Length: 287
View 1: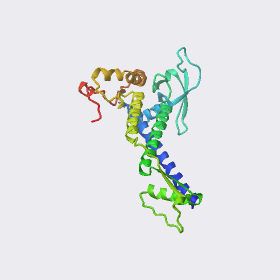
View 2: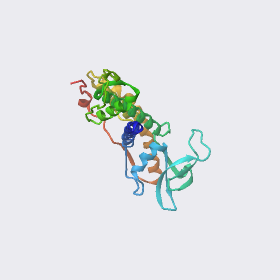
View 3: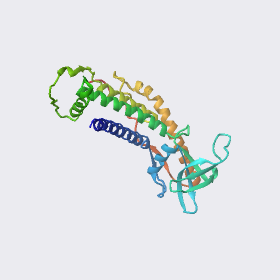
View 4: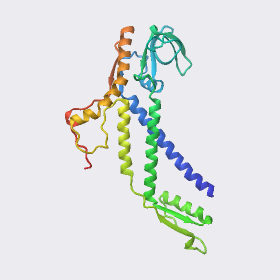
C-alpha cells in the first residue's frame, strides 16, 4: 500500500513535468517557425517543411531534380572541400524516406537559418527547460498554498500522513481514525510559504520576451514598469533587430539567388509588425 501511494505521487509529478516540457517545447517551436512566410513557392514545395527543417538542421539546399522533374528543398551535409569563405563546394542532401543525392555548389542554392549557420534547436530546448523549471516552481508554490504544513509523525503513522496529504491534494477531506489515538504521535508545523505565483508569472513573461528577441521579434520586457516612450522602446529593441537581421538576411539572400538561378518569383516576408508610435508609447504599470 505504501509503495502504491509513493508511486502515485511520483507518477503525478512525472506526468506534470513531462506535460509542461512538451507544452513549452511546442509553444516555443510554434513561435520559432512562424516568424517568416514564404510566398510563390513551386507547388511541389511544402512551405510548412521549410521553417521546421531550418530550425532543426540549420541549413537547406534548393535544387531541381531531373529524375522526378520537380524542385526539391532538403537538408544537407557537406561532402567535400570548402572555398575561401567556408562555403561547401559539394554537398549531400537527404530525406527521412531514404532519398539522398550529391550536388555540386553550382547545382543548388543553399539556405541558412541564421548568419551563424547553426540550428536553433539547441536554443529551443534551452528555453524549453527554463520555462519548464519555472512551471515546476510555480506548481510547488501553488501546492504550498493549499497545504502549507509539514507533518512530523511516528514511523508507524507515515503511511497515514502521506495518505492524508494525497487526499487533500485531490480536494478531499480526510479524517484519521485509529484506536488508542495518541496526539503526541503527530506534530504539525506551518511553513508559512509566501505566495510567489504572480512573480513567477512575470518572470515567465520576461523569458518569453527574451525568446521572441532571439527569434527576431521585437518585444518589450514586462520587468520594466515605468513609462516607456518611443525612444526607450527603440533602444530596448536594438538588439532584437540584430537577431532579426541574422535570420532574415540569409533567407532573403537565398531567395534572390533561387529566383535568379531558376527563373522563379519566390518571396520571403516577416509575419509580424513592429507597431506604430502610439503602440510604442504605451504605459506599462501595475494598474
